[in-house]
Length: 233
Image (cartoon, rainbow, N blue to C red; front, side, top):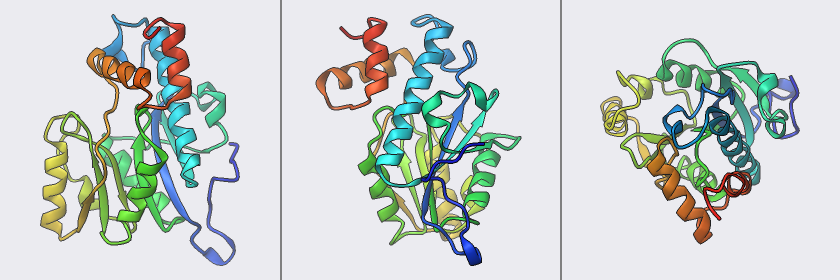
């Protein structure tokens, strides 16, 4: 699989190479992504919006000057949008979300000095949020970014900390609190990054549209999709 210059590996002599963003995504197959938006959008439109989110988030990772490791699921990597195929591509592990994230960190931290994991449905993400998250890791063991729904959109660490993925279920309103409790119990110091809203529901899409119109959210591919489909004028 193609790897761009930003994709890192262990250098000669086994030296660590830089900080990495682990970008989790699904392959944008109609009917399989952003399904909670179906009704407001068609399956094909949901897939196109998902692809736009992914490309915008990928560009922000590159703008933060971080190595990008894209972990995909739900289809062939050949179906990923062309702009992201230059990343280092990895298939997500089997199992639940906690297992997938834990194993991605285990792999990544063999090669990189620190890593932050995010999802691809974050058009409001900025390069500054990523940069600041790595800066927080200079003083704490781990960093977590609260999402608006009670979960988290970002988690990062500089050494492998599997205890952070001991939460029983993901997707509920108490995932952030449960993860912070697990960190405290394990003696892991945990910093909070800025809050950021992911996009899963029609309400999230409305809030995104307002942010794009106001100029508070800069996501060129997402904005182009929203104008083409009439979500925004």
